[in-house]
Image 1 (cartoon, rainbow, N blue to C red):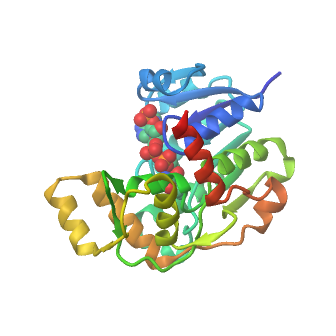
Image 2 (image 1 turned 180 degrees about the vertical axis):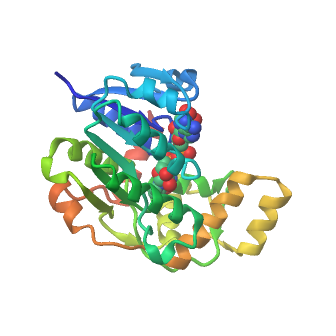
Amino acid sequence: MRQRILVIGATGLLGGPVANGLREAGFTVRVMSRDARRVRARFDDPFEVVAGDALDVADVEKALGGCEAVHVSIDHDQEDECVTQVLEAARSQGLQRISFISGVTVCEENRWFPLVDRKLRSEQAIRASGIDYAIFRPGWFMEMLANFVHGDRVFVFGRPKRRWHFVALQDLARMVVESYRRPQAANKAFYVHGPEALTVLEAQRRYCRVLHPDVGKLRSTPYWMLRLIARLTRNTRMQKGIEMVNYLERVGERGDPSEANAILGAPEITLERWLRMQSREEAR
Ligand SMILES: NC(=O)c1ccc[n+]([C@@H]2O[C@H](COP(=O)([O-])OP(=O)(O)OC[C@H]3O[C@@H](n4cnc5c(N)ncnc54)[C@H](OP(=O)(O)O)[C@@H]3O)[C@@H](O)[C@H]2O)c1
C-alpha cells in the first residue's frame, strides 16, 4: 500500500513544491490548511484535504488519522506549538516518520534570535519523540529574490557581504522526497546548500539582469530607512523581512552539507539555470 503523508504548510512557499514532489513520487499526500479553498485554488489536482488548525490537537489528530508520516513546513512563529500538537497527536496514531523544515543558521550560538530558539525547541522535541525524523536546514531560496522587487525598484537591504549557497525550491523538494525513499536518511539533520555561493547583492544583480532588465543600477537602502518605510506604511510583513535579512547578514551561513549531498543528492540548480527556467515560465 502507498504511504500516506500529511503535509502541514502545503499552501506556503516551501510546502507546496514538497507536497507536489511527494505526490509525483507516488505517495498519497494529504494537505492540512486552515482554509481548504486556498488548497483548491493553489493545486490543480486536488490532494486529500483536511481543513484545520495545526495548533489544535483535535484537528491535528483528525488530519493525521491513517497517515504514516508528516511533513511540517509551517510559519516559524507557530511551528514549535505545531510540533508539540503533532507529537501529542502522534502518540495515538502510530506515526512512523516526521520531516521538518528548520534553517541554515539554527545553532545554540544564534539562540538569542527568537526564530532560532523556536526551531531548536522544535528540533529537540522531534529528536526526543522516538519517531524517525529528517530535519532540513536550508538558507536563502532563489524564489525569495522576487520579494525585493517593487515596481521598477529593487530594494537592496543594507550592504550585503556574506555569501550564501542559494538553493531552488525544486532541489529542496527533491531532497525531502528522497529522504522518504532512503532508510539511511532517518534521524539526520541535513544542511541544504545550493551549488554556488553568492552575496544577496550578486544574486539580485543576476536576477534583475534576466527578469527585470529595465531596472537600473541597484542601490543600497540603509536599514534605518527600510524600517522607517515599513513603519510608515504599517507593513508588518516588510518589518519581519527586514529583521530576518538583517539577522541573516549578521550571523552568516552555517553547516556542512556533505552528508545531505551524499545521501539525498546535492542540489544542482544554479541561479543561472533557475533564471532560465523562470524566463521560460514567463514566456508561456
Ligand atoms: N522562506 C524561506 O526562505 C525559508 C528559508 C529557510 C527556512 N524556512 C522555513 O520554512 C518554513 C515554511 O516557510 P514558508 O516561507 O514556506 O512559509 P509560508 O509561505 O508563510 O507558509 C506558511 C504555511 O504555514 C501554514 N500555517 C500557518 N499557521 C497554520 C496553522 N495554525 N494551521 C495550519 N497551517 C498553518 C499556512 O497554511 P494555511 O495558511 O493554508 O493554513 C502556510 O501553508 C518556516 O518554518 C521557515 O522558517 C523558510
